[in-house]
Amino acid sequence: MKYISTRGQTAPMDFSDVLLMGLAPDGGLMLPETYPQIDDATLSEWRSLSYSELALAIMSKFATDIPAADLEDIIQRTYNTKTFGSADITPVRKLDDNLYVLELSNGPTLAFKDVAMQFLGNAFEYVLKQKNKRITIIGATSGDTGSAAEYALRGKDNIEVFMLSPHGKMSAFQRAQMYSLTDANIHNIAIKGMFDDCQDIVKALQQDAEFKAQYDLGTVNSINWGRILAQIVYYFKAYFAVTNSNDDKVSFSVPSGNFGNICAGHIAREMGLPIGRLIVATNENDVLNDFFNQGKYQPRAADNTYVTSSPSMDISKASNFERFVYLLLEKDTARVHELFDGVKQGQGFDLSDVMSAINDQYGFAAGKSTHEDRLATIKDLYDTHQDLVDPHTADGIKVAKELQQAGEVIVCAETALPAKFAETINEAVGQIEIARPAHTEGLEDLAQHVTVLDNDANLVAEQIRQHVSANTAA
Ligand SMILES: *Cc1c(COP(=O)(O)O)cnc(C)c1O
Picture 1 (cartoon, rainbow, N blue to C red):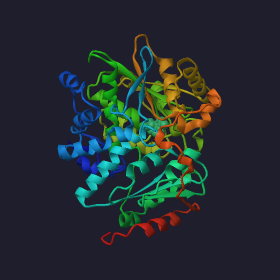
Picture 2 (picture 1 turned 120 degrees about the vertical axis):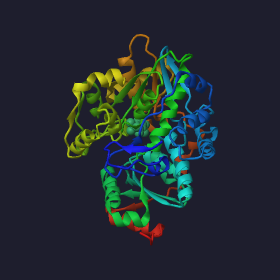
Picture 3 (picture 1 turned 120 degrees about the horizontal axis):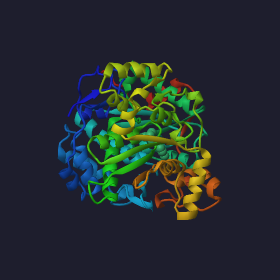
Picture 4 (picture 1 turned 90 degrees about the vertical axis):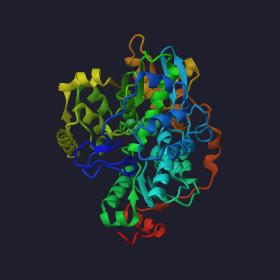
C-alpha cells in the first residue's frame, strides 16, 4: 500500500516513511491511496479475534512494508494486560439499553491517546532501528498529549523527547505524571508562559531547517498517520462487542477536538464496518458542530478559543479534518489545497452544497455540550447509575442522548478517566473519593524533574544541544 497527500503534490510513499512524518512536504496530510474493503465473511472471522489479533489483521492491510512477524511483535508488546489493565484492552460497559461506553482510557496516562501513542512508541523504535536513524521529538502540551507521548517513548532507543509545558498551568496530577519520570531520554521543560508560547517555540525550532537537520527533529502530533491507524482497531472491537450479527448497525459518539479519534471511525466505516452514524461531540469550541450541521467551516483564532472544563477539546482548528474533506470533495486535491490555504490565512469555507453527502453518505452528525451540560451529565450518571465519567466523556454522552434515534445503538468513547479531572468532578457531584488505578497511587509524592526556562526558543535549543550530539552529516 502506498500513501499520498491530500494536496496531491507528494510522491507516493511507504508506511514506514509516513510513520515518522508530520505534515506532507506539500503541506497536506498523508493517507492511503485507497481504504481496504472488508467483506462480510472477513468481518465474521474477525468477530472472535482478541484485541492484538484484530490489530494485526487490520494494521497489516496498511503497514505492508513491515514484515508480518515484526508487526505482530510490535503489536504484542503494545496491546497487553500489563499496559492496558485487561485482555480486552478497550472493554465496553453498558449504561442503558442501546447506550454503551467504550473504555479507551485504561492505559498508563488514563486518556485515550495512550492507545495510539503506545503503538507509536514501539513502531518508531522498530522503524528507526531498521533505517539506522534517530529522532528528537519536540512537543508542546497542556496535559494529555505530552504525558501520553512521554509514557510511550520513555526508554526507547534512538529517541530523545523534549516536552514543553506552561509553567504552573497544568493540574497537580498532570505535573506529577510527566515530571516524575526518571528515564534519561525524557526532558521536561516548563516555560514561563502559556501553552501557545510553548507551541510557538516548537514551531520556531521546527522551522529552523539547519537546526532541524542537525538534531533530527520530529513530532508525534495528532496528524500522525500511525496514531490514526491504531485508533481504527477499537471501532471494530467495539462493534463486535455490542452486536451479534453483521446486519446490526452501531453509531459512535466521540468527544472531539482535532478530529483524530473520529477520523479513525470514519475510516473504519469506509472500510465497510456497519457503522450507522458518527456523532461529533464538541464543547463550547464548536467549530466542528457548526460544520457538520450547516456545512460551514469557520475556524477560530487561537485567542478566540474558549478555556473550558473539557480542556483537551479546546481546539479551534481541527488538524485532521482535511483527511475527511479530501474524500468529501472526491479527492479534488487542488480544491483541498485552495480551501486549506485559506484556512491558514484565517478564512473559512462553505460546503453546504454537499450537506447530504456529509450526513447520509458519510454518516456524520454533531452536537455541542457546555459546562452546565457536562456537570449535569456527570451528576445524572453518578446519581442514577453510580457511574463516574470524566468531563470529555460527559460531553459525548450528553450529545449521544440528545441525538439518539429510536432503536439506535450508540457507543460513547470514554476519552479520559475522572481521576484526571477531579476539580470538575467535585463541582458536579460534591467532594467524593475518586477511584484511581493502582499504578497512580502516590504519584504526587514522587520527586519531580523539570527544567524551568524563560519564554525563549534559544534557551530550549540550548537544552537540546546539551543532550543530543549534532549530526555532522547535516
Ligand atoms: C485529545 C482528547 C480529545 C480529542 O480527541 P481528538 O482526536 O483530538 O478529536 C478528547 N478527549 C480527551 C480526554 C483527549 O485527551
